[in-house]
Structure formats: C-alpha cells, structure tokens
Length: 333
Length: 247
Image 1 (cartoon, each protein chain N blue to C red):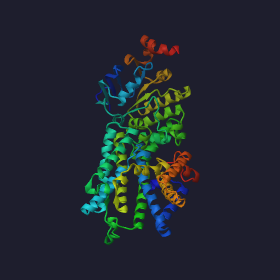
Image 2 (cartoon, rainbow over the protein chains, first blue to last red):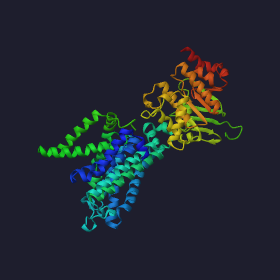
Image 3 (cartoon, each protein chain N blue to C red):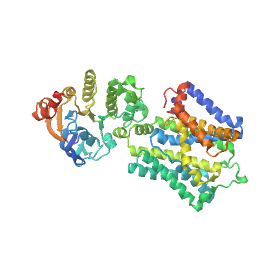
Image 4 (cartoon, chains in turn red, yellow):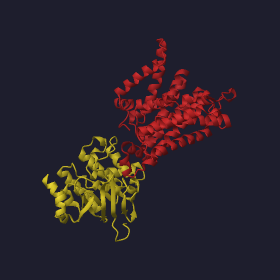
C-alpha cells in the first residue's frame, strides 16, 4: 500500500482517491446494467494484473491464461456441488490446481529451455488440453456444461458467495484493488526487480546472482494463483461453466488485451485498459443493434479496427500516455 | 579467506573448452592471488572471453578444474558463482535497457542487500565513484557506449565481489576516461582489496594496472609474467603486440 502511494505524485493520489470513491459509491449512483459493466471492467483489471505480472514484469508471454481461470472455476465449483465444500475453502484447492498446472508448464518450459514464442505455444497447448479434457469429463458435465445450483434459500449466504449483483460488484472491486496493491508491492520489492532484470536480459540477470529459473517459477505461480482465484469468482458469479467458453483461446486473448492496450508492465495499464475495453465492447454491441447490424463478426471487426487504432496511436499503451498528459506519474513504473 | 595459504584465490587448472571441434581454450592454467590485478591479453579469437565464460559459469569446461577461494566452481551456474564472489562484465554490454541506471545497479546490489532501499543506496554510492550518479534516473538503453561500459562495471561491483572479471571495459573510452577508469579500479583494488582479472586490448591500461599479464593465442597460453617482461617476449610481440603496432 505504501509502495503504491509512494509511486504517485500528489495529483496522482488525488485522482486515485476520486476513482476509488466513485467505484465504492457506484452501486448507489448507477443502475444494474452500468454496475454489471463496471464489474466486468474490475474483473478484467484483476485478470490483467495477474497476466501482467508474468508478461509485463517477467517477460514470459502466456497465451493460455484461460487454463488457470478454468481450472480454478472447475475446482471450486466441483468441490461445492459434489462435496459441499464452500468457495473460501475451495479457493485454496483452486489455487493449488492452478499452481500445479503452472508447475507442469514451467517445468517443461524452463527445464528444457522452451523460450520465447515456443513458451507461448506451450501455454496455448495446455489450455487446449484442458478444454478437450473437460469436454470429455462427464463427471463435471462435459461439453454440456457444469452448473451451480441457485437456490432461493441460499440467497445472501455470502460465505458461499451466494450474493446478488452488488455483493459481486464489491467482491470484484476488492479483488481489483488487492491485485493493484500486490502488483505495486511486488514491483518495488527485490523479487519484482529480479522479474524486471529477467525480462530485460536473462543472461545479465544470472551474472548478477539472480536464479532465473526459480524466479520465473515464482512469477508463473503468482500469476497462475491469481488467475485461478479469478476462476472461483467467475464460477460462483455466473453459476455455469462450459469448457468451450472458459478454456477457450478467445478467453486467453480477452485476458491479455486490457494490459496490452493499457500498457504492458505498468501498474495502472491493466486497469485503464479494462475500463476502456469493456465499455467499448458494450457500446459497440448497443450501437450495432441500433443500426440493425446483426451480421456475425460485425462487432469483432469494428472492435479490431478500434484496437488497431489505439495501438498505433499509443504503442506503449494508453496509461503511459495518459499519465504523461495528466501529470499523474512522476516516473512511469 | 582464500583457502590454504599456498592456494591462489582463483585457480584455473588445465582447462579445455571445445566448440564443435574448435578448441577455444586449450589446457589453460593460471592462478590469481588475492589483491592482484591480472590481465589476460591476446589477439581476437584467442579464447579470452571463453575463458571468462568458463570462470563465470556461463559455459562448463570439457576438461580441467576451476577453483575459487578453495572450492571447485567449474560447472556451477552463473548465479552461484556470482553469489560465491565472482562478478563479471560482458564485452558486448548487457544493460537492462528499459530500467533506470540506478535500478540497473541496484539489481546487482540486491544480491547482498536486505531490501531495495539499501540496494539503491549502495547503488548510488557506486554510481558516484563512476561519475554516473547524475544519470541515475535515465533509462540505461539511452546511455552512450562509454557510459554503458561504466554501467557494466558499476553493476558488477554492486554485487560486492571478491574478484571481478572485466571484459574489455576500456574499449571505446576516450584516453581521459581510460585514465579515470584506471584510477578508479586501482582505488577499489587498494581500498577494498578487490582482486581484478581483466581482458584488455588497451595496453596503456594494462601497463598501468596489471601486476601480471597472461597471453593467450589460439586458445593456448604463450606467456605469463610481469607486464614489462611479457611485452618483451618475442612470441608475444609476434602474435599480438607486433600485429597491434602494425595497425
């Protein structure tokens, strides 16, 4: 927390305080629809932070983060439905499963020097294994999906994450805030500097005493654990899981778009990116409906062009540009 | 602490390294005592950088043994060797380009510093010694080549080594900068009793600093001794110095 405030000049602190105040009071100010968009943006910011720790800090490009999301979701959902174990306890199992999968990928990748794009391909492969595997796992519904029961008598059982939209909104806000604090603390720590050193030049990092393999594992574990925890959220929020959705490549791409648009390796980039992309996607859907454009792919096409425009205008991301324009950062961390 | 009294701080014993049939380092042996400034010279392709890579753990020798402070280090990982007290610079500089100058050096210092604050304070002290303190906030990628050379030295020193391997850190420096670097290295050598092993083409620096010189040619040792003595050796003149003079 202190690291976060230390990174911001006075103007940045005021801006942050205003944003936090607005987000905390949002349920009183906006309707359910806008609140659901804010929730998605917060959740996107959370997942973006998780991915950004791995790629933005440590330089490891994962294109299969849906793997950890799906494993976390299925683990906690299965424990709840099949064994009556609540999501808070289930979260530990979700994280354990996510980290175990990360350990397998890391072991293959770091042990056998599968680096760069080949590491990225490895992450895609594992996400695809999981998708196909869960598609063929009748115990958890297979391709037909796995559903969490929504019972009226359980309403308000927040200890089992059985709350309403406002409950989930605040949960997403807490997770996004927690992820920001964690990222900032990491970024300022010795471990965070080891991440950065590896991203910049692994050989030089080793020569300075950084155990590159161990530190890469740590980055991967932190990122996987956070994403798996996000999976618990998504399972109990949506109450339905389909392998073709949660493990899908497009899900992995969704996770990484916000930090890329916002600024890879920056602390606020994932947040700025998510708060741009989620409403943009929603607005596009609305606008296309107004114009009666229902052709499949129309949204993806327009969305794609907009992203290309943003990336061309600010290649290092929106946040560094925004922070410079508004004087929100003394130096861009 | 350099083990038994008769054992040098760094001992390279009959080390051989081959790359696909090419013998880059051919049965090289040398011993460097604590506090020495030891220069390795020789024409391009003589195997000097490979020798450094072997000592620093970037590559493992095919034959022979490398000992540091009484313990075998050959085959260990670079980070283990750095932790044991050998720091190195890279001939082709390897800054962390997107990080600030002070963060570059602080990453070296954090090996032995409790936290980043301490590491950064130590980094600041080292940057002052190398006249880089005023540029501490700049990104390392934007530095001039001489400054990047200095940054390599600063970062290696920040790991608080007992022995430092300097790979052509004078190359590209102007004569005045060379003199400053020579003075700084001599100062650190005296005050901190830092042992220095340097690969150097700038003979002005070698003659000014080195207590002993080792000459490599085609991977093999052809001479070793005091600088004045070695530079008179006919084989050295023929294979290296003569060639340099002709340029």
